Length: 93
Image (cartoon, rainbow, N blue to C red; front, side):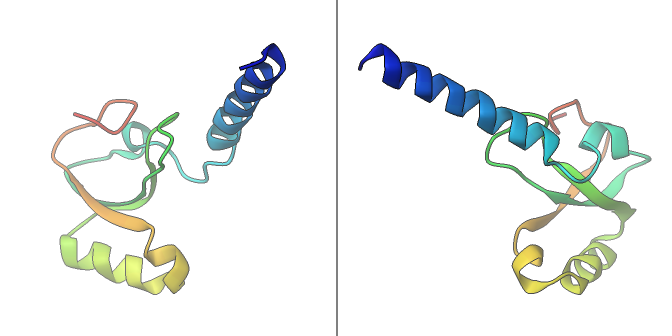
């Protein structure tokens, strides 16, 4: 690999990371946690800031109802995730 292609690759990785951080729409799992229950989340392939939370805490049935209310192309990317305790910054326990 030439220096030029390595430089392009590194710039692309940095740009992708910034886009993932700035393009996130909801608060992170640790900021959105208010109590145990099911949270409506959107996961990201690049885990820069962790999953984004769009609602909760719900019962599982209520979480699925909220997910189904969204447009079909958005609803397929959303997950109902159970948080028994406050998750860390990256959505892990």
